[in-house]
Length: 266
Image 1 (cartoon, rainbow, N blue to C red):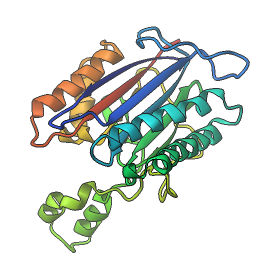
Image 2 (cartoon, rainbow, N blue to C red):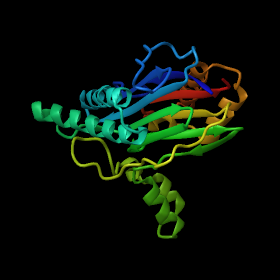
Image 3 (cartoon, one colour):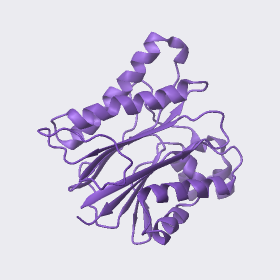
Image 4 (tube, rainbow, N blue to C red):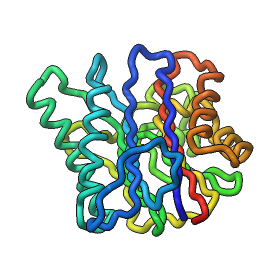
């Protein structure tokens, strides 16, 4: 298989963009070969390194944190010589240290942090590491599946509703839903999602990485767009999904960044 990608973002109703995303196309992750330079994603590649981060911390802190996380994470993934899963974990550790170092140098940024999803997509499948509430979806034959864990309070609040402790109306309106239980802040990371084995992929699969601003639309709408426009490029799919978020016109719409990776036949 080969892979193409596309990235699109909107600032939403916020004053600044605090999301960041990077994709590094590689012909191979074999360390005897050099990584290929970034392009626009239209030339299919045999392997991709992807990272998406959603910053938090107010003022410029969130934007700085997400950029730091992305820039620190990728070099370890590309240049490490350990198994992919170990590279992902080391990349996360380096990203966390980068934020800690920045805060140590300027304590006024104390409290800033970011979510992070980092992934390697190659012939063995999809392997990822994630912290926070950014989302990793797989769309296959019109069906969409959330792959990574949600480290916000939303799953805990929903569990209370399932147990009958609160109503679903109360659960869905709870202002704490977006509070993070884990983030990349320079401190110890409480929760990390990083499966041991890669997720197998098939031609036609669409991988979606997105910041939580995408929650303004339903996952089924994402699946519908990717299925309806399955002949479109990955870049076009990313743009269409972001346009759907914008069209929703949700009050206080958060930043939304979408990275699309499509698996193609060799």
